[in-house]
Length: 117
Image 1 (cartoon, rainbow, N blue to C red):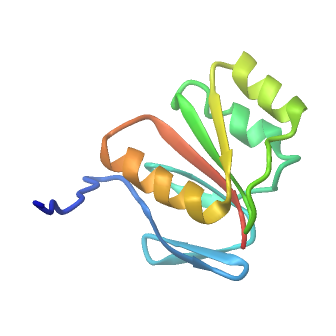
Image 2 (image 1 turned 90 degrees about the vertical axis):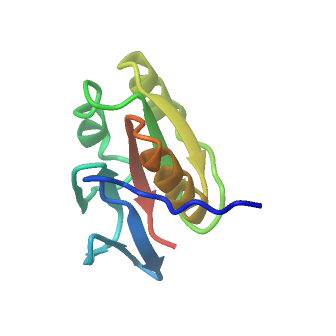
């Protein structure tokens, strides 16, 4: 098997997470987080649909981390995002962080909205 180092260019992957926090580019973000390849910020959580819809021109897929356990995206949130042209993939937050990092390294137009574990 041949191993390849993952490179992100200018993009900012999730470096780590723990109880109640995420770390991106050396910065710790407490609570829910919203990340794109260019920035990571605190997010208002599942009810903060407006922040997610604002990404419609910049992303194709949103990875929604639902905390320590996998859960479905609320139907209203999923419908609003899909109407704006954003695909939604809901999964546990650890899985969402890993999937986001991999697709980000591929140069894809993705975002991550995660609830803490």
